Length: 139
Picture (cartoon, rainbow, N blue to C red):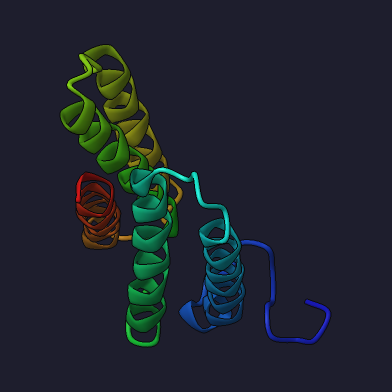
């Protein structure tokens, strides 16, 4: 838009997503380093931040070759985090988890309905976010 790198806020081309993804990763990395300076931060929060940084890095690498759904990476990460927290702390979170699954389905369906992504881009985004954040929070 301003510099001609991004044509619209929708960023329909995968090349348009590179610079925003780099900035997002940079600020998450900065946040992680600042968070690490606080001695009382629980390990699962640090794990969540590290997993998020890893997901952003993987999404950036994928974006050079393919357009993956960032929306689904985010909601998949939320799904993985809630599942990992419920396992880690023995919390019965089936209602929250069910609600997140419903929202995930609606979000994925909307991405497909708007022709913003293919089914493979939606599914891969959800799995990438879910798996990486799940393991980051659980370990």
